[in-house]
Image (tube, rainbow, N blue to C red; front, side, top):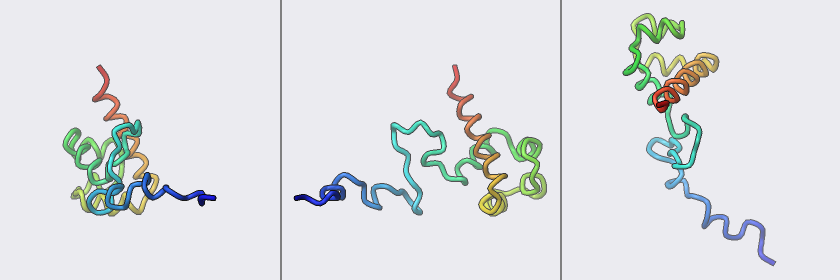
Length: 102
C-alpha cells in the first residue's frame, strides 16, 4: 500500500518556487485576492504614489502618515498595529477595485 503522502512532494512547490525574494509569497495568476503576493511595502508605495502622504494622513489618521512620514516609519508602525494595517489593506483593496472598474 502506498502512503497517503506519496507523490505530494512532486506536486507541491518547493520553498524556492513558492516564495519570491525575501521569503515573500509570489502571486498566482488565478488568485482573486488583490493582496495575494503584495507586500505591505508595495501597498504603501502604491498608495503614496496615488494619494500622497497628506491625503493618506487625512484618510487614515495615524501619526506616521502625518508627522515626518516615511515608508520605513510607516512599515514599522503598521507591522506592530493590526488595526492600522487592516485599514491600509482595505484602502488598497478599494483602490485596486476602482482602478479595474470600467
